[in-house]
Image (cartoon, rainbow, N blue to C red; front, side, top):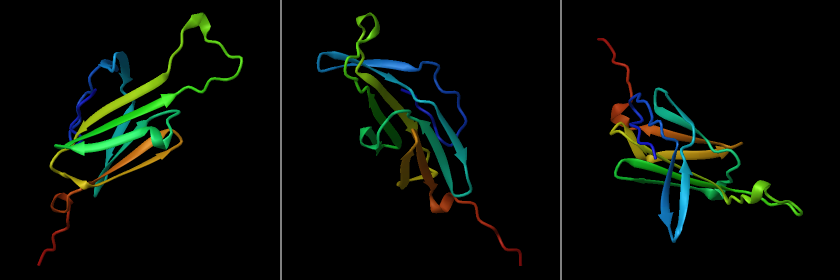
Length: 135
């Protein structure tokens, strides 16, 4: 898992995979590739989730941390057999983003299209830039 303060440029951890035991089996997670850019009124993160369907993505926000979990399953074809007897269930993704006080957690939106999850983090009203009139 990767923690990132979305308002600061930090180098993500080099580790791209972590594992945990769940119900007697080991589940490995890959950290998806992502990009974050800042706009005037929001931050936008694009997360690469190739082959993941909308129903297989879970997003939650708690204590200033957005957690993303996603799973991609394999569809087995008839008369298909794996090479060297290796069978994989698919791929699991997990990503954690630490949100700053600048982000309004009630105004986070998500859209999944063509394997890219677009997250929009609206800035809190008092944090948005504003013009000051000179009298």
